[in-house]
Image (cartoon, rainbow, N blue to C red; front, side, top):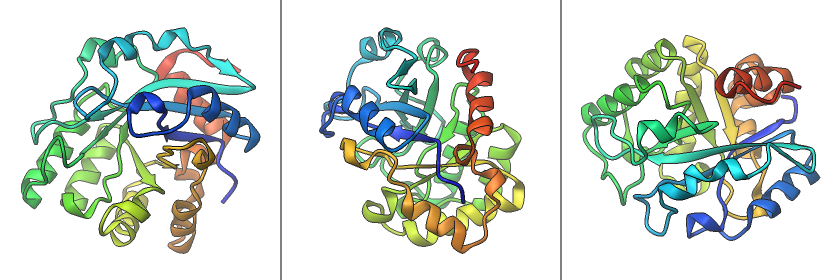
Length: 241
């Protein structure tokens, strides 16, 4: 697989449990030759996360720093199994990149049926771009049913490299999710979920797994500049070159 051009999931000091600044993350992205960096802080319901005013003011950050195109986004917390998120729709529509994820402190894992329903409802939300780290074994769901729904609603599935070290069952689950995405032609992104600048762009575990199963490179959105730029343009109406 070609080197990635974008890290689509990163955190800074603003998230409360990460350790670098936006500038440090951008600088590391530039050093690694990335063309895009998504700033995706945890949304307000996560302990110590920034409040809504932080996300409303993200426009203050330039679109390009050190040659890196900066997408201003959020990692929203899924609040329940009905698709509720912790940022309002009006604000979500102003963001460049929206990930929706389950986190134990916010919504405890449910049954297979509940978890599946939750992802089905999230897929229906037009303001969500990315299905966040769904390989977490604590939130098992019906892959066939949910991933067909992701396809129907043009969602992107994240293969989160951080999951392989911190989320139980991720090695097996991410592999099966990727296989199902290939079956239904659902695009994916590989991401670091970096909480320190030196981890920006560190997606080796995700790439190795995708290569191991022969995942189609053309479905990895951030493995090609033009492919990822097209997605970003469609979402934001900006970043024209």
